[in-house]
Image 1 (cartoon, rainbow, N blue to C red):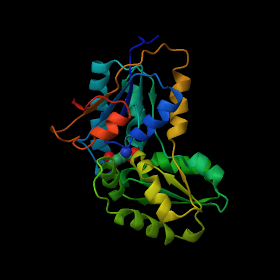
Image 2: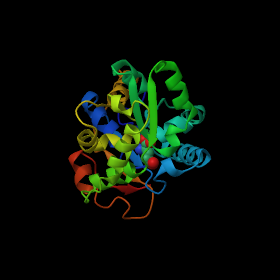
Image 3: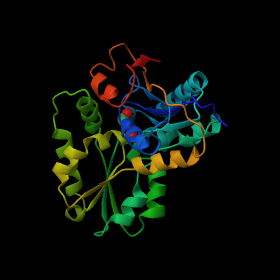
Image 4: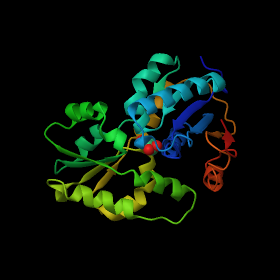
Length: 264
Ligand code: DGL
């Protein structure tokens, strides 16, 4: 049984995993959390599989030694679809991944045309092929890479001016695919993109439902930790990279109960 102060470690390349954190807070308000943002490695979506796997496995190994988490959540679709199996093989704590919400999207669609927006690395993964084969048979699942949305989400949480060109590019790209006009469900297959629901909702319109996995992941974590004692403490936010990498995030972190960013 974990020590009551042992944290849940939420890991992402940047701020995207805060969408999982927000959902987790709803179901486990008292859980001590350490959020780790690998800002030195951002963006994962533009890296090779080998680069992402080595980085994620190495960092999570070191972070697990230092923080002794009761559970690790890889709050990043890119890292999860590439490295989940490998990380599970090497770490002894329970690991929860974040993978594209194709199953709920396939259950929701009426037209049978689903869009999936993710990073370049995520959309080419075998993991996604397998989810599609298992849950979306007989549906059209159109994938599109939207790397620009990662930077946009990072800018949004730093209260910077937003250039919405990447949102429009993703919309137009999906609309141009076969039966694109019938798309009624869009899988947000990158945790960063859930921070842009307002902007994506405005571009795709009210007839397209935006689906992500955040609530399901939070419920899964709560289930795995059921019955465990938890001492609420100040949530910590650790970042890789040069000092200043987390500049501008102060207000959004404070609003979520995090102490100021610490270097890892
Ligand atoms: N938040 C990450 C995801 O869910 C990716 C962002 C990145 O490219 O680093 O895929």
